[in-house]
Amino acid sequence: MTRPKLDPTALEEALEKLEGWELAEDGASIQKRFVFADFSEAFAFMTRAALAAEKLNHHPDWSNVYKTVDVVLSTHDADGLTELDLKLAAAMNRFARI
Image 1 (cartoon, rainbow, N blue to C red):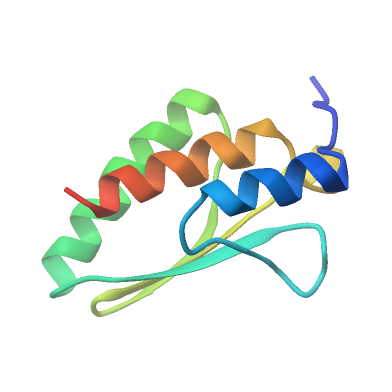
Image 2 (cartoon, one colour; image 1 turned 180 degrees about the vertical axis):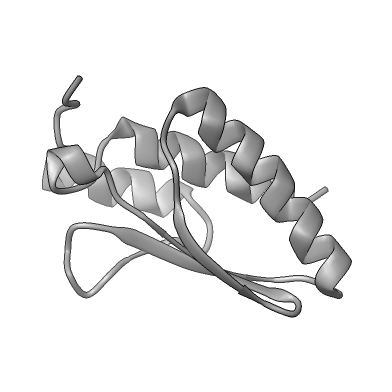
């Protein structure tokens, strides 16, 4: 099922509420760098995020080096950003505060 892309106004409003997330240079994805105390905290965050992503059937592009997790979200079948990206970004922000 293809989801509708967010219009620019809705995206701008959503990003104001999503602490630390920014529009990527491509204009079709959002990105954030999460930095934790150590590898264990970073890995625990990724585990929580992976379970949420699986429930949403929406999977991030991400990388992990020691205590840093870089995340890029986009809805590939919509060629841009959808509500799924915002939901997963919000969940990731919650998990990072645990």
